Length: 79
Image (cartoon, rainbow, N blue to C red; front, side, top):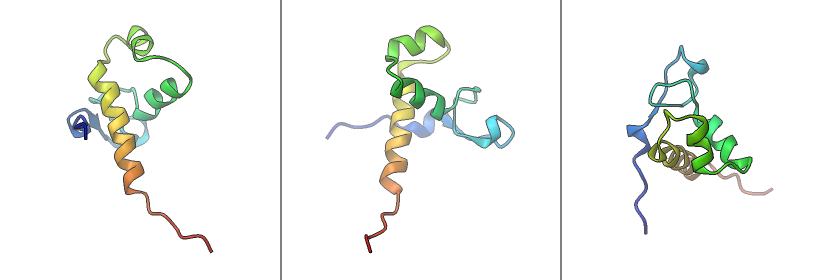
């Protein structure tokens, strides 16, 4: 199995910034922003071109954060 990046080194949550949404390294760019850019078809390179303060590791951290959240979801059995 491949090892994932430790998103805790990149993702921060600050109550006064972007309503406390998980953000990248204290910036105003949220994990949700990056995931939406990827979902819309933007490549990692396109995102970094638009936001040069981001790194490849930042984007991978967003994906790792989302994967960890998905893993922690509670599944409800069907009735």
